[in-house]
Image 1 (cartoon, rainbow, N blue to C red):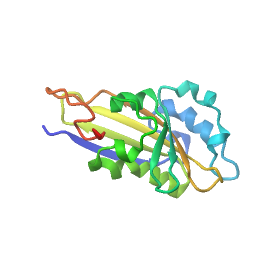
Image 2: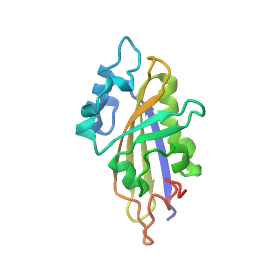
Image 3: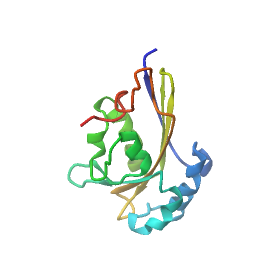
Image 4: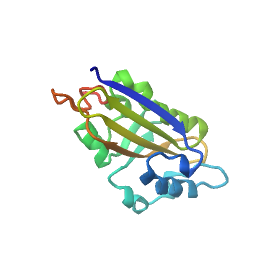
Length: 176
């Protein structure tokens, strides 16, 4: 059976909208830092705020000239999924081109709506299916224009076939 990858992205309006319950307190922390409907800034948080989720937390900065997303903090889940350290890399360069638009969708929606988003990715059709849950929390230095994202990433299973296909081989990450 061929490998299929399905993406599903949602805006988050309330805590109960979050599918992966471990991320609910993280969303509460982020929502609690919003002031008068304005997005919190990266400077509104200290790294200790994220210790409970350290395995899952990553940070992206929006590169001002190109709008590309640069990894500023790669969590263990991001490193494991990519099979390498990716801090400093651009998401557009580490993601496989065939799924790039789907991967960028929760960031674009978060920036457009100035709201948190979540994405679920389901890989099926091989011997061991995998699920990935992503929470995207936009941040803004001026309260409006998104220039930073905190993300939480969790996945279960690893896509394997009898030929031991890794995420790289099924098109989630770019070999570059």
